[in-house]
Image (cartoon, rainbow, N blue to C red; front, side, top):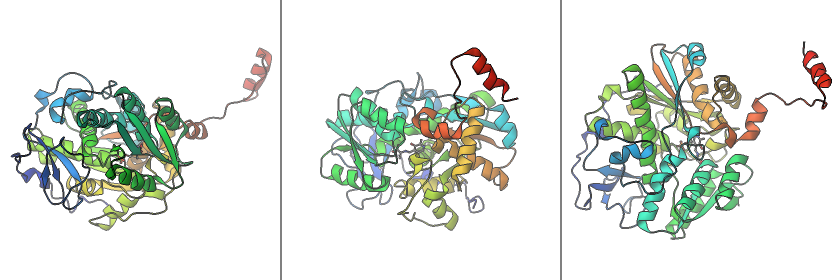
Length: 429
Ligand code: F0G
């Protein structure tokens, strides 16, 4: 299960040359992670490598140090991003909560909850969207599109509207939580409900993007992941300021593995900039729902690639995904940081949702998977009691009001008079 034994602690990409190819007039370029081919970032729209269809990532001639960061929110990290602020709704700067009771219960040295549900549209997607939509504006596109289990569609709709662009979202019919559809709807997205799962939606929207119908803003888009890197940067700065030490481990829910890839990239860039020692990179630890766990399967089997699951099911609909498109970026991230991956049941997810709620932190089911995974890893002895751990909670409780109501207490009907209310209250005793 754990990959620690085989972990070499040599982040393989630290060795890559930082010298820009000739396409990089402004010190930023795109590189294929599979064949290494490079492209100018803003001249032509492309999502994958022209030569081998591999995943692309953004590269920089100059990597910033912590001293280069100033200001607030995602754009505090502008020096680590491919362009300057354009379309923003003040995303980032989310709380890194202390949870003393949960920390004692789980028995780790320190536990913090990075609550990404506190972003403008209630999920971490805003961090990627502020950058992705800014790039779309730079490219001059007028229609944005995504496939989504809900949160991406809410963020796309909000940021697209803010940027004055048309938005189109493809959702798996009947499998998206109510709050998310409401957001996409009010922010004016055209919502297409697909008779299929998320992976089918992504297949279709990729095809639409390839045919030039819209600009794709799923996490396959390398610019989105640049914005999501800032989660890792904020966690590191938060631990440094509070403990004078980096976190040992970051536990996060995994769907398309965009965050896993983005955090790994953030840490690699810090290592390359000389800001972080390779042995100090936090162990990236991914959690999936048992009914949608292809990444966990690949980590457990030591496989180089992820097998697509055609049938997926979980109450944590945000991570109801069978084909994590960022796996080629995320698998090395988990392995080379000495992390691992684990799956949890829907019951464990709901229990963790309640654990967080007892600390005053309201999250949607997928978010609670991180805490459920940490508990399971403690029980298996994979996570040490001396570890400083950050759990990422990716979306707000109100995203999925039905799941919250099902996990919480039932409202009780009472008559409209004090005596009647008192009768009900004393009846409890
Ligand atoms: N948590 C929440 C609340 C999410 O909405 C998602 C992904 C994830 C975790 C997984 O993150 O893909 O970076 O591994 N939601 C996407 C969407 C798929 O369409 O909203 P990942």
